[in-house]
Image 1 (spheres, rainbow over the protein chains, first blue to last red):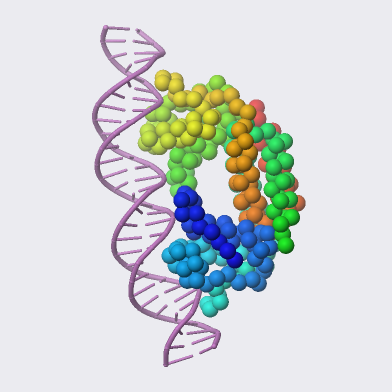
Image 2 (cartoon, protein in one colour):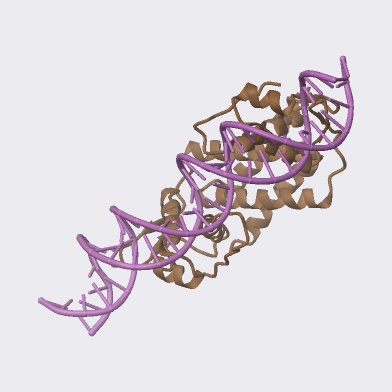
Length: 127
Length: 127
DNA sequence: GCTTTGATATAGCAGAACTATAACAATAGC
DNA sequence: GCTATTGTTATAGTTCTGCTATATCAAAGC
């Protein structure tokens, strides 16, 4: 587990942590059952406050990706069958993204191609 | 042009305006050459400060979607051929979204289907 | 029993988001 | 030409978010 912080980014630190764990889980670099560092440990590694890490972990637990354990940091959960709301969430996000792409001149075909490419690209890197 | 504000949303007001104009342009509800309300006018309609609208309009102009005119509000520009950076931006956003979908249990096939559906759905509603 | 660890509480600071006002410069309409 | 409208800029204040600092508690591992 190696995480990188971009301090100059406008993206909140807790969001950067969240995003990177999500991606690691998505590509299988973090398998179900795998352990994440403890809150304090990761905070120290990233030179970040304990609460910042805790917030990221809390969001990850809320999304059902990890479970927080008293003494072992956190553990990645096996992906549960997606609730209907996950599909709805995905569609909403995607709609906004595609709308902006359209408005900025990307053709539907191009976006469809890029979409497939993104899905395939991520799945390929699943180890 | 009807815009709605969700005051309870965590999404900034200027962002909500931006998003809705983007979608209106994408769907063709706002055609190239079409006019947007003046800054003050829209601010009054939305019960929002002048600067909030101005910020949204500034971002839209920065993204090349509209041109600001001294006395006529703003005008929608014809979509220019997308710069390479637009494609890169789209791919980056999409990658993050797909990663989260994967991590939350959506299957690749399902996401590919939803993607196509989003693109088609938006294009269909183009008037 | 001591230490580690997640959890909770409080306080402070910097910056973002939003508002309130005022003023300037360009211009459309008369 | 005059006036009102409009984009633009400036300044200042308020509220909220992101982040940090510190301290404490309760549960569990060793």
